[in-house]
Length: 120
Image (cartoon, rainbow, N blue to C red):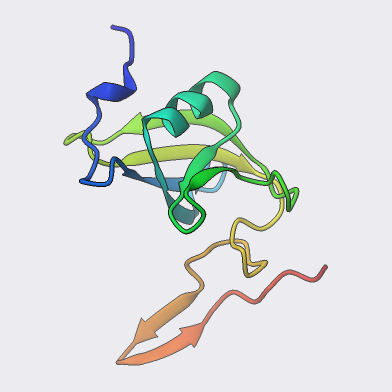
């Protein structure tokens, strides 16, 4: 069966959450948004393309930073309203220069940073 991005369930803004996961380690690196054209661009090029809500434009991960995401596997969840992108990540995934955007742990009501920024 051919895949059609129109068959996904988008929110009222026409967006769907996409979770980026390192294909080798299973580490969750980040979450961002895609619209149907970003989905298609990602599938066509193998370079992960998101939709920037703040800039209202396409955002090819790594285009300016060099921290590129290459798509290895594209998964759709059971409700078709969330994506899992298994990727090869070059450099940090987070704009804070950390490997993952999920660098804060909350334990017993206290926040703790568990991933420091990469040198560079």
